[in-house]
Amino acid sequence: MKKQILTMGLAAVASVASAASPSFTTAAERVDSLMRCLFHDGEPGAAVVVAKNDDVIVDSGYGVADIVTGDRIDGNTMFNIASISKQFTVAGVLSLADRGLLRADNAVADFLPYESGQWRKIRLSHLMSHSSGVIDARPRTDRQWMLHATDKESVAYMDTLRQFRFEPGEAYEYINPTFQVLECVIEKVSGLAFDDYQQRYVFDRACLRHTTYFEPQKRIPRMAHAYQTGTGGGEQDFAGKEVYLGRTVVEGSPWKECDYGEETFFATKADGGIYSSTHEMLQWMRALERGEVISQEALALAYAPHTLVSGSRWSDYQNRPNTWYGYGFFIDRTPGEPVKIYHTGDNGGFQNYAASFPSCGVKVIVFANRNDFDRWTLVRQIDRILREEGVLE
Image (cartoon, rainbow, N blue to C red; front, side, top):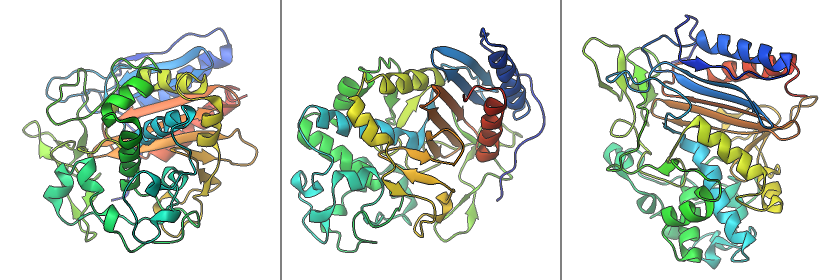
């Protein structure tokens, strides 16, 4: 069902950071006003951060993280950031490269017993840039399997894979399980469990105290639940028929919970299992660009346009103009505008966006626990405000 921007206002929990520049103050007021128009008080909402260099221009929360408790969303609320998690997996791989333990151009088969088909030709770089030609052969029609499959179970088919979509490096196709292959490489090379390696060499280096991987029995303080309404925001089953996956959380409420237990992919980590907040995401983006997690040379590789996304015949749902994929990041190279490095993340009712404009030091982060609004319309409006107020200069 086509998503539409919500147009009604709400009372929000919002703190707009004051800044010395009048253009910053005006930009903050305009972004806050825009966000207030999107979500109703007492309903699922979003957290937003806009920063430029050391200034935080907007740091606001709107709506509630949990309909049952009424806990309000703020910059410390923990969201499942879904595919934004991929850049953290890439950072793990590139930190091993910085230590001389592997190279981006190593074949996957240098580390894992994947010898069938074209595995000898597939490099780590192909996995990180979604250009491997590996197909998604998980049993996606088995709903119970998809709800609970772990990373290891998700890649069990890889070592016997015979069918590939295209030659490595030839095209772009967004494939989640290839990031679980990268998880296996990290474990093989480091000798550590994936979670332990990521904590020590990725999260701790960025001073992320609360960011963590989801596990079914893990308690995550300040965790948001994700929601969909009974009308709109529905999912499609694998035959293309619209189905509704959530469960009622409050009698008579149109909102249905849609996260672990109702939606697939929450049990896997490397491709989308991180919970984080807008505050810690900003900390992460700053630490990454300061060279505190991986070297500047490694970051330049991650931010480089390796694979053309625009026009891809295999991922037409992501067919946005002037767009490339680096290692764990989309790259928007629209002529006349600053290069934007970003990623989106969608899982159940969570809908997220995190972008960096490296040339002007601007960061924009929006984490939402509802998916019935048009993210791209919102993002374009925020970008327009920042451009008009001189923030992107």
